[in-house]
Amino acid sequence: MGIQKDRVRFNVGGRLFETTATTLANAGRNSLFGALFDDNWDLQSLNSDEFFIDRNPDCFAVLLDLLRTGELYIPANMPEKLLYREALFYGLQDHFRSAKWGQFDGNRLKLSHSATGQAPGDGTAIRAGPDGGCCIAHGSMVHVYDWMLDEHPPINLDYQRVNDVGWIDAENIVISVCERLGRGDGGMGMFCKSTGELRHKFQVSHDNQVKSCTAGALSFSSDYKIFSSCKGRSNEYGIGVWDQITGKQTDFFYEPAGWSLGDADKLQWLNGTNCLLVATLFPRKDNCYISLLDFREKKMVWSWSDIGAPLTVDERRVRDAIAMEENNAICVVNEYEDLGFLDLRSSSGGSIRWSSRSRLMKGKMPEEPCYPKLALHEGQLFSSMNDSISVLCGPDWVLTSRLRRSVGGSICDFSIGGDRLFALHSEENVFDIWETPPAPIISSFS
Image (cartoon, rainbow, N blue to C red; front, side):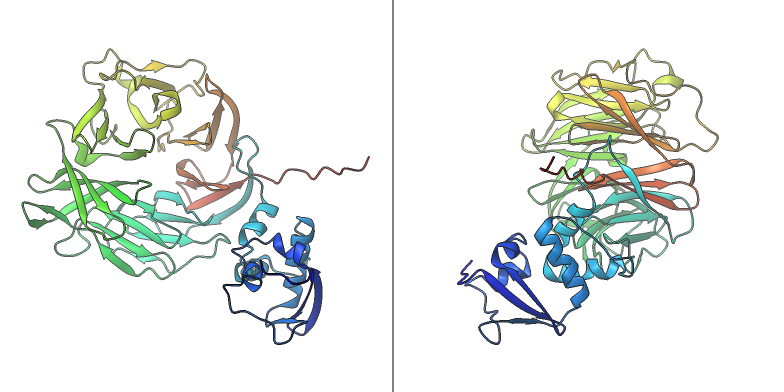
């Protein structure tokens, strides 16, 4: 920063504030204060002694104190949404959030909010966004919320049931549907999160012809690719690949006979191995299929199926699967929330090693169950079952804590992103937001 002197004076909405460049440096170069003192920006004061900002002075005082002390104190008469809006203006939203909530830790999560959904019917999916918000699919509607849980205009898919939804970035989401978004597309589109505007339709092409295709499960890679399971009318069954930037189809993996890749329930991109996990699970199919696809070599490099496996039908039907690259394993869960593990180092897949230490519940499922879901985040494993989410840690994945709220019914889906865990209940369209409280400030004085 090209700072000539340490003391800085601001006139904010008619009130004078004086601070130091050292304090303002805590805001970071990407903030408004960083821009004020950057030689590459043409933001100068009207005179040499004072900067004028036409904003709320009360909020400025709170945010300036946050830069000075690292602590956030919100007066009782100040709406939190107003303060967060001002934090966005100054580029201090990350400071605001980190002061309010700490770094994500599944064993320290506390329920911070519960909200009621706006669409009728059971929820299909909930996805945490990169900006701390989320999107929720209910039938043919997708509702998008920002970090303050203010809802943007809903996205209406005109009675086309949503199969999956995912975030490309903080401004755009991709939605896959059971029917076509329009003539000559692949049942998948990119939408603006703030306006609901359809920005792009993703086409499926085969033999230089655009095909009608139902898109299913979605996944995204770090090199800006979109993956989706696809089910067409002739030979368009398998996994399609599109470029996020151009929207053009770049590849298609046609399924081997009998593997039902086009019906996949879950896709997961593995950054370490540059492969895609594809899982087709019960009850969509009578038999479960899990595979790893390597698009560079155009082949399936790992696979497992429960066909012919010595497992009882009632106990071993796999409901969800997630790859754990650091452990060279794929974790699966059955309807009793028994966790099992498959060895990725065995190309044949082998058999599931069911872990008795990870068995969390016993007994039959309720009459209207929500099947278990899995998530892996920062070395912690999460598994939903009925109205709770279990957190497992350590080399043996031992239960260390459980998240549960008595209202809302069973959890049909959950998602983790940034500093939040979102849980969507099947009843009353309720979704919960779990956050980690900030670590206590330890004084250096005795």
